[in-house]
Amino acid sequence: MLTIVFYQTISLIVYMLIGVIIKAKGYFTKQVNVFLGWFLTNIALPSAILRSFHMEYTEEIKKIMFTSFLFSIVLILGTLSLSYVFSVIFKRKNVERRMWVCCFTFSSILFIGMPIVEALYGEVGLIVLVIFNTVANLVLFTLGIMIFSNSYQLKWKKVVQTPAIIAALVGIILFIWKIPIPNFMYNSLKYLGDMTVPLSMILNGALFYSSSFKKVFLDVDNLLFSFIRLLIFPIVFISFMKFVTDNSVLIGIVALVSGMPTGALNAVFAEEYAQKGEKVSQYITVSTIISMFTLPLIMLFI
Image (cartoon, rainbow, N blue to C red; front, side):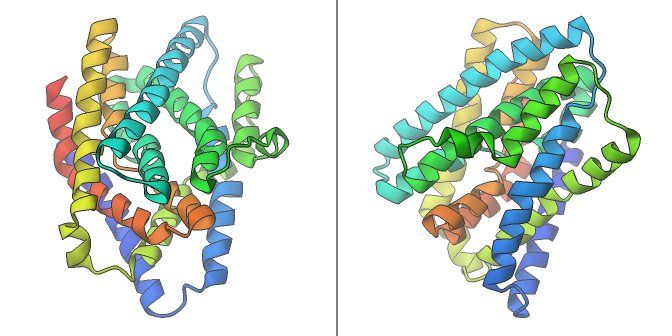
């Protein structure tokens, strides 16, 4: 597993370096930034979500999905609660508190998680991971946007028109009604969905460019955030899972999801709604690199 984590993390860093180089060369303009943000949230991510529901329907899988859904809700609510508590304890206020809460809550689930889960738990593990990822995205595009934008009004019309939400609903309908996605369409969704992580990390690299590398990794706030996100959270949730269930697959996936670095899309929303993309890109960079060492430790803990 250490090898898988290492190579996946290196890939993320390579994508970020590409973004840094593009920004340094002057090609990454504000218009490019806006376009990439739009493309990620409206095309690439919805494609990845819809494609993830392409699986054979069985009663066993339906039961696994329902159980995973319940635990994913508990995980999200628990993470949100802990995030708020830690932001209060460490006296983060206003926009800093909002960034902490969102970056603690929405992690990089699929890209690093998928190869590890597939190797350890097979198809059943991937199904559980897909449900966790779907719930996380539904919350991100509803409550997450409210927190990022500091708005307490949930505009349901806008929510149901969000491509990621539409993709999740369509995917669930196709799965329940046993409607297969044609091969040509599945391939298109796969290729578009596979662009989500590279493009989002390239965007993060461009946002990160104006930061001092040395300053970022010596910044107490960045290190504190990563310590809580990568060690405290998984220890809390692993302990909880071991108390309520003996399902090794669920325990293992909760351990991974709760111990993942913060998600790349957080920088997109932070920049769009709070002009804090640069700071959030620091959280992403530092937590991604440190996770190379913490994820194997977390898996040993279970």
